[in-house]
Length: 185
Image (cartoon, rainbow, N blue to C red):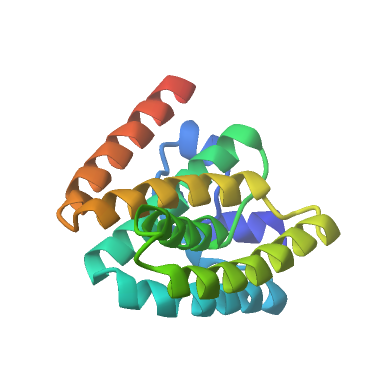
């Protein structure tokens, strides 16, 4: 797929977001993929972590962490690669990995069995994603890392109290707005 085509359907592109104010691209890009391999890898990863996430988090927390992590990944992506066209849900999916990691870290003593199972699955997916990152230069590891970190913060906050999700949403949203304004004002 050409960059022009991807831009026409909502891919991330620094100048479109920064100059033209097309912030919606930070969300639409999560629903775009570069081919069957790209979407298959993302769906396999989401299947692995999504089923665990569904049993540990409520819907609002899951959806909030998914989108906030994906948007954070997109912002870091345009900061690191401002003129590169970006697509995919990997930042959001890594946010789910991060959320589960945050939950497990907070409750590690009570979740010993879940921790072992999670770390096994996490290791497999992390290895596959790193392998893909080595084989394909187009993989944006900065978006993955940003999603992972933002998700981990969210997961740890939610693990402390499910009511904390609203504080998490507020803090992350304000942080992203401030980051965006700082970088591009």
